[in-house]
Length: 120
Image (tube, rainbow, N blue to C red; front, side, top):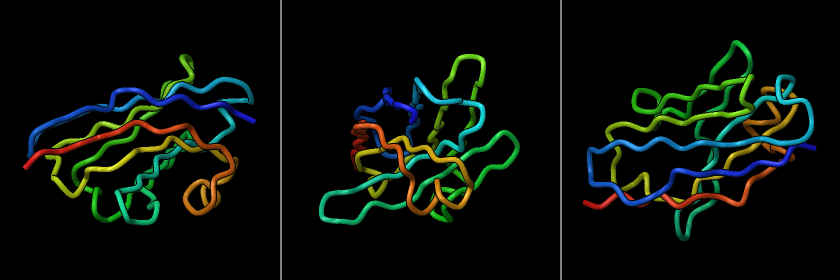
């Protein structure tokens, strides 16, 4: 099972940008779908985006603002977040599984999360 470590969270102003990184170790990185979930205080975790070797999927709320990418040589996945809004404030979790559906619905591997706070 792949181990995931997130980095890059922080405080940013409304309309700003931030890039999250997810470093993966163990497993076969190139065979995994990697994604991001987020959880805001008092809310359930929600899917944000996922990437395979070809496909990418985004939640509607972030479709035109976030970009997910991966570097299989470095075992890294990135989430570029632009035009951030206060409602994007949440803990962001890197996730992994071996199918596109699983990683978007019930991924088996989770990182510990990184906090993103967007001030208004």
